Image: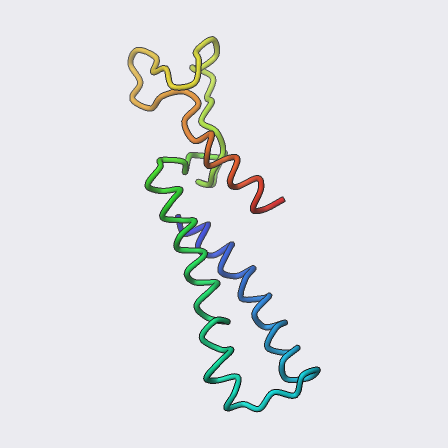
Length: 111
């Protein structure tokens, strides 16, 4: 969850800094205009987007162990060989193939 918060908010804050520089340098917007019209979006969009993605993936149980980090890979450990997605092998609690939706979202958002 915190991985997504940091990754997406950091990436989008970088874009926000570029947009801020564009407004100041190229369009010569005054500080008052930026403070009242632009800055709320430069802070709100990265935070809101990161929270929405992180909470959605967490709620849909799409955050799995990815080899040392918890992000959005499909859950296919060795004990799932021969089992279909959604099946739970005897003695285990987590179904095989869990997180397919999260992996698709992660792939499209990170390229």
